[in-house]
Length: 187
Image 1 (cartoon, rainbow, N blue to C red):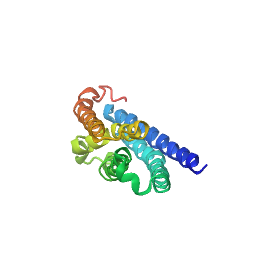
Image 2 (cartoon, rainbow, N blue to C red):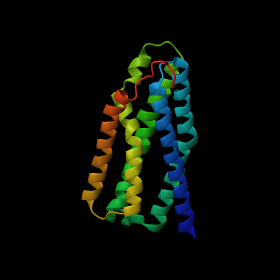
Image 3 (tube, helix red, strand yellow):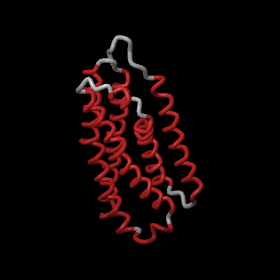
């Protein structure tokens, strides 16, 4: 019964976090299409609300359930299971990155969007913030894939991480070119 409850909590965390990251992605695209400062500010506020209401609580539930499942059912054997070790390390790195670079960049955008600060254009063009933002969903996909497929060797794990990094790099390069502000200012 304990395993089923922890697994359910883990699933709830994945759903909250994944749904939140999808909402953040869509709100970001909405903001990128906008020339109107008010519409951009609204999109930036929506990104912040999605992080605060979905992504962070989902990550906390996921971390708590995952830590409990690892401690109760795997213990020190985590070092002998590449999929689990990689899942833990990737989640920790993504949690740190998501709550530093990405989240802080969106908060800065939100703050700057309320003013006529010329730094807004530079903040909107930040490649590092864009890369870390576009890495969120592929990284979550790798983490979920590790839990589903449970590879017991490192080559498929390294390939999946490389693929996630490549997807994030392609999105970082392509999205600003493909999603340009609409001429009318409407989003």
